[in-house]
Length: 81
Image: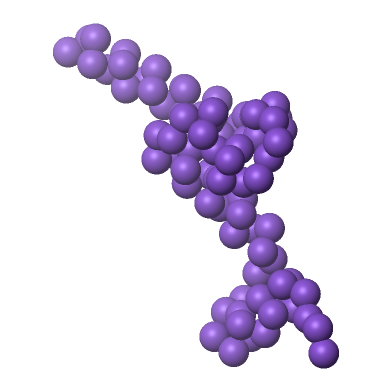
């Protein structure tokens, strides 16, 4: 019997006594971690299989905005000291 990745993943989570996770949640988490780690958003689409950077930017813009805000806050603290 052929099982899709989601079905196999569900079984793995069940056997490991993990809460029900969706594979897409792992993909999203991976993308967010890449961006928070400082990976340029131009490089993230390749990891996610997005054909265009616009798809990545539209999906993860809120993350990059937060990173930008944090960077500006750090820079402001640096300038004031």
